[in-house]
Length: 140
Image (cartoon, rainbow, N blue to C red; front, side, top):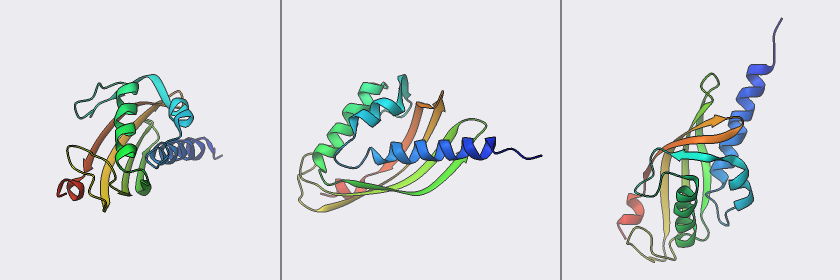
């Protein structure tokens, strides 16, 4: 006898990761942000921001303010159902119309890539680890 539970769990994790990554497209759906993140969310790669839900939100707000037409796409996903973790490789593109990380506005399209790992608990994102390559922007 087979069960659909692992497939359902995998699909739920994939959907949460896709919805989460969609937040990095302007404008940000802040209601979705609230629904996806646990109140005790921990950003394990906060880049100097507070490692909290509000700290992550402030970083996201700065990003979309600097790139108001930002669009992010999922390139690849790896799902670990047993640990409720998803690794996401993504690419974002947007026009730099504001200062970001001390550079800009440049007025040119910028490509940002990254890899994120998110961990879910009770269907919501509890932790995040991530590495971004924003060297295209830093060249000015």
